[in-house]
Length: 362
Ligand code: NAD
Ligand code: ZN
Image 1: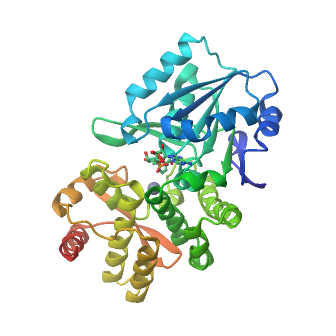
Image 2: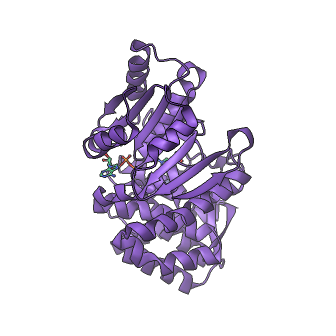
Image 3: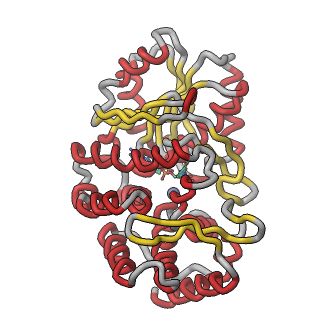
């Protein structure tokens, strides 16, 4: 089992990475003793695949489960209210521990409930999608959607620990798996030149879902996010590097009403921002080609014929990265390095033209 520590003073915690659930019981007893009450929060898919196994390994007599419908539509006030209701009906108090068993949707909903129920209860992240394992389970950001806007309501709530079982990736469908690789790519593109080379050299193993190799690859990817979170927990500076491709990506995701997956939208966003950075002279055309080839190899999209470029630009203005009317984006300066860049009116026009060209090229 690998262990990675997140240093956040009194909110520090560890990420454990293993290829099974075997060590889960030991860990839970070490952290919470033997008489803690656990509430597992999960969605119906993950429940069907993993709940019995998880409960058996945890030897859970004092364990109950709340299951909601899988999908982004469940990242809502309605689900959160139903969970509060579930907890209150069972008189669950602050001694309980919530367990988020599932992908990013389960993790975000559970983290939000853990941060708000009784002003905060403990929770553990057990991420089961690639996206959740390398990204959403780390860093304590928890958001729910509302008012037709994504992640518009949220809080920071760090978990007690994160337990990643890489074997759960075996059952993840291909589309979600590939979309999860986008976040690994983001880490490679912001984590330094070596991080990018490592990712590129290991892409075949990632695509083959080589369970043993994946443990180390996931640890390396998490480590990049951990370092950025440690340096900037509340995303005022370097943590925002992780938004590479996300400003355009979020706008596309929202525009398609989440018909396109987060990772797919971010993939288009990464490609568009690489083209932009090249036009502005920050990177070479060959860097754009390398990223293009990698996205193709992973099987991720770089354009979409249903996007409306003007609408995407409008939506970018709703992004949390807009300050004093300026859109701040993350742009590459080389493969593995990025910077924060405020768009001026001319830049916005260049991006509009790039989006138009991507639509036409489809
Ligand atoms: P998801 O949670 O909807 O999971 C994707 C699908 O895979 C679901 O149908 C789920 O039931 C299924 N699934 C999960 N694990 C499985 C497994 N092991 N085997 C088979 N099926 C499985 O989506 P996601 O891609 O994990 O997460 C996306 C969400 O994460 C978005 O809402 C996004 O906003 C959020 N997110 C949050 C952060 C953060 O920092 N909090 C970061 C990135 C993304
Ligand atoms: Zn993302």
